[in-house]
Every structure is written in C-alpha cells, then in structure tokens.
Length: 273
Ligand code: ATR
Image: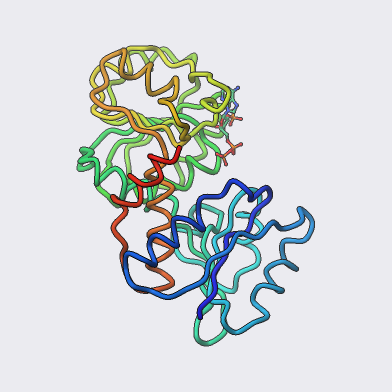
C-alpha cells in the first residue's frame, strides 16, 4: 500500500490525516497517511527515514519546515519556486523528489467554489510573509489583475511586486493615506493576527464594496477580521478551512492523479470544529 505523511513540529493537531482518509474513501483509493512529528533539528533525517521504504510515495510538509523542504528536494514546481517554500513532496518513479506548493492553488479552488469574482479583480492582500507570497501567482493566474498588499513592514509589501511583474501592484503600510480610497473586490487576511483576536489596522472603508473577505486562519467561530468586514459592508466572509482542504486536494491530485471533491470534506471538518 502506498504510504504518505504530513511532517511538522508540532503535528498533533494536524487535520491532514483525516482529510486524506476522506479523500481516499471518496475516490476509492487505497493508501496510508500518517502524521509525523519531526525534531526541529532533524527534518532531513525524518524525511530520509520516511522515504527509506519503497512504499513511501510522498509527504506534506508543514510549519516550520516548508523552507527546509524547498532546499531538500531535487526539483521544484514553478509554484514552489515562486513561493520559496514546499508543502508537497512527490517521489517520482525515477527516484527523484519533486517539491511543489499547493497552498495558493488551494485558496483559488476554495474561492472559486465560493463564486468569488476573480476575473480582472482587485485583491487586497493583508500581510507580506510566506502565506501572502504563496498566493499571489495563483491568484494572478486565476485572473486577478490588481494587487494592493498592505503590511506593517512596508519594504516587505513592496518586495512582493517582483512575484507578479505583469500585474498592477502597490505596496502599502497601514498608515498610507491612499488606503482610504481603495475599494478592493476581495480582501485576504494573510497575517496571523486573528489567532490573537486582533484585526489588521485597516481603514474600515476598504471593506465597503468588497464581495468577499477571506481569513487564512480558521477557528470554530468567525474571526474578528471576518466580523469586522461583514459589519462594514463586505458581502461575505470566510475562514481558511476551505484553503486547508483545497491545498490537500491538490496534493492528493499530484500523488494519485485524481481530483477529490472538497465540498463534502469541508462540511465534515466544519462540523467537527
Ligand atoms: P507566514 O509565513 O504565516 O506568512 P510570517 O512570515 O511570520 O508568517 O508573516 C506574518 C505576517 O503577519 C507578516 O506580514 C507580519 O508583518 P511584518 O512583515 O511586518 O512582520 C504580520 N504580522 C505579525 N504580527 C503582526 C502585528 N502585531 N501587527 C501587524 N502585522 C503583524
């Protein structure tokens, strides 16, 4: 039986084993998927041990090892190269290890399922860390043509312009006066502020005309960012559970060649939060 795993530190709370078990049931695939806690200073050894058996075909990589996985693999997909991080490793039949990054595709898949207006859209991305970086190119490829990136550290926001040179791109910090007049179609919170119940200090006017506010974080209740957006005119607000299931669906496709339907899996996970 083919064998897969998610590797991280910590890993106990990972939903990936459940998600992949549900995908396997849904698509009639037979596989084994486990969660592995790697020592912080032993990621390469953990990978070597896992791949020492021929049944081991691939892994998901999560915090804090995505950048180390980027260095470890033999080759990189365009998405992984652009993101500077690998969340999926595929062991190819020739024995080489391919690193891919499905986080951005997972977000796009979830946004599409929610009928988000992506074509020619103006997207505001809040935050400029790895999570923000990884979604820019997939959003551009899905039709987004204007990006406003807002971040505490202005230089990091502006540096992301190089990721999508053909798009209209502006980087801001929270004090920029121009923010008052921006009316993005979609606002994505790529900071982790919601985990401490904080909202990014944006002018409330940015929420006014938005169709969707999307928080990459998920919790059992709507986040403060979601509530702030809804209270200030945004049409709908979602958390990042769908992105989690979406990135897993693309990993599953890379390994198994089958696209699972994320909708029933997302409903099941939601009911368990
Ligand atoms: P990730 O890989 O998950 O994106 P990260 O690279 O640490 O994590 O990025 C976290 C993001 O949250 C960054 O945009 C960070 O802003 P800076 O680039 O200025 O550090 C943002 N962030 C974290 N704490 C914040 C805070 N208290 N106020 C505003 N932004 C914050």
